[in-house]
Length: 158
Image: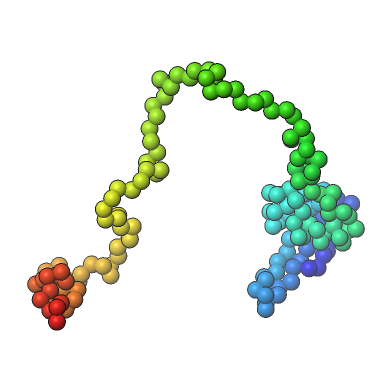
């Protein structure tokens, strides 16, 4: 990667990634704004964790990339989440009663099992599936003769 520093005061950097054709890596240009914690790749914004381009920019500007890691990734933050005391769940007999009268409970059709039998076809038919002439008789799948099917084919036992 090659770094071009545009504005050292506002921490605005352009990172140019070179193509590595034998490894299948396509290069590109990414603008990293460390003060706003943004990068064109989108990972720095979404994960709130420095991406590879932000890490390279920090190295070039002699900054610590760990200072751009959000607090949710730090161990102190996790301890603060579990610091509070959770009350125990009371016995089920002591739960308040809830009336479900205004609600109609309907099953979700997507979660129901499919009915037994032949499965539904999801195939999209096109011109290839339509016979050229509609009066052409169906052919046997076994001997390719008209007038019967492969189940009742007289040549099947031969």
